[in-house]
Length: 478
Image (cartoon, rainbow, N blue to C red; front, side):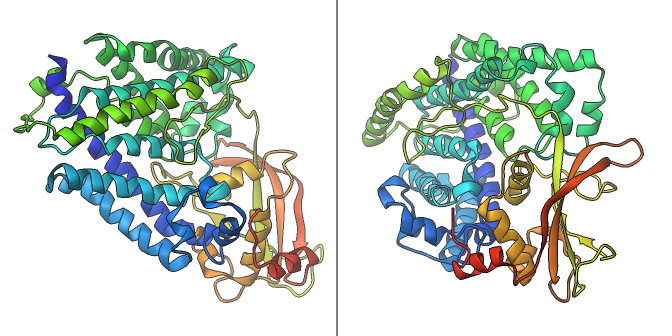
């Protein structure tokens, strides 16, 4: 029977989710304080003062400040390692549920006060899948088919939502030309993106058709009997693998691939893999009751995501409650045709003239120096680099966090500089900073070719009025 292999599917889900949680908490450990800490680009303390707890529940309403942001990130890393390694199974059902619950509530606490820097769809996806993981149970207890099928329901909504929003969105998804632009204009290319960009046009069109197959047709088969569901999941996993190797999308596609393991035939895999089923104990009655309660909760909360899926005005990546329990998903409904980049430069000179020598700051992931090869980053997430991609979109204006970024570079703030790949002013901060606006395209001899469009932000110093307002407000949030 298919249910005989659910123990193996549970193992895949738990180990995979533990790994993704580990990435998420390492990001929080390294980046939350520079981005949303006491002296961050969008300090969470201002957000906490402005937004009631009931609208954005978080541990950090009670335990405020950089010290707690650091300590809970460390705790999250430790709990993630317990989940990924299986140590959380050692204490039975209660300990297993406690570890997964703590992972969920701690990460929820970061997301709900992370503002723009935590507004990505994969935050809600991790929280929803992490909440379901609370009810998977330890490896010594019989897994419940309800929870495995709720993971299938989540995998379906992620894939199907992404497919529908493409068909309803940018015309290039319908005329099969989106991949002519996507690999070059995506938020953060990797070393293989240029190769994918230069594939023949007919192969790009075939790739779009494959996208529609994997995101629209096959997810429906996740609920079919085996081996149909397993075959559909395998094809979707192949599709997700192609996205993973062609760009840096944080843990979005990694986590989606983990969810797409849920429709696999665990019995078949157990017969062909060098694994042995553990001795499984019956589920405790209270745990059984909680699982049926989970099913009722998900069914009730699925109404809004389903209504959104069938709506012509489909929303992308939206949560309908502050706990991010049952959400709606969708990615890249529109594709940018051109790539623009903001290049931040500084100078030590006392006065800006046409002959002033400027030095570039280099980010860890986003394009800058045309000679620099794009890095492999995913499933790690460089939040500032991603936001710089959004900031460079035409007609956006200046975001408050971006002005704060310039201000903190002028002050030589170590936390912010630590997010960058290269600081051209290691001894003292620059006297002036300016930002230039370039168009980028993949080069022939160099990794990138770029053309100057104009000035994005004029030279500013610590005495500039716009920055004085920032300082007087001590880096307020938007």
